[in-house]
Image 1 (cartoon, one colour):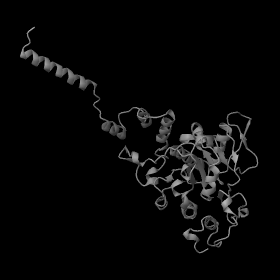
Image 2 (image 1 turned 120 degrees about the vertical axis):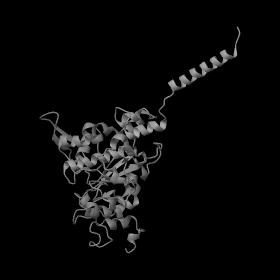
Image 3 (image 1 turned 90 degrees about the vertical axis):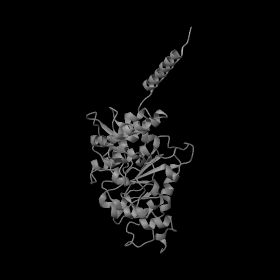
Image 4 (image 1 turned 90 degrees about the horizontal axis):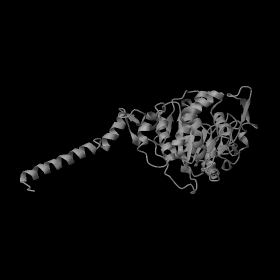
Length: 371
């Protein structure tokens, strides 16, 4: 067979054309950068951002579910713009760097440290100056990085005193009624789940928290097991009418929020189907009870997890004057003249005794120099 120069040229051109056509046909024209830009602009997907990101996630099913919860928990009704000082959403584009950083993963066999605890304070705007400033000057100064404040209004004077993202305007009603309380507790629980920390510990804005004693307590329990630690305000289970079975009653234990309570990571995750993503508010509405009772209802009645009583938690409903050595207790409170019997500052300068308690625990603090 005679091969001419023209045949070689034609064959070469044909092969080149086939190669070019194959590359163009198989290559995805959308580059990774353009794909990310499409997600940021909110286009290119029929479903929500959570579903769009699922295919890009790597890791275990648990990690995937956790990331999905993360995306859902940062909803527009949690005012992160005011909470962290920088908008999370700018010009319809998601600023991923503004999401709070998750805790670094550590072995479950390692001892629990203060940084493994999500300390949550529930407050309201009317108490920012009177109550929150006292906590900032005392016990929060020892655990600012681990503490998150959940309130109902934007207050830049409070925000600037805490790390970025640690003051959350929940946009919940500014009241002490059931719906407002459950609304804030719902946000607290969602943020805890997203943090990936080992323990969720809730206190009110009239509590003093002894973090040294708290850490000693939590180191005795396994965060990978279901633990509900706190102190009931009643000597018997709370009994209510069943909402699903007419004529029947339901009894359950709950830890009073006024004394503080802690929930392990395992139990927090188990609560998500019943309480996550705002469901806690619906449960509170169905049983017509405030936040701490609703938490107890979900844990003790629905999930069948017992309350472990810890008498080192104290609320303002107890006789605070019996507390003379704060080193032995986890939380303290106050109510007008019902305060701890701790010497130190005068009653005029320290009516709650929190400053005196703080100086008893940390005598080298600058505020304690005059004692």
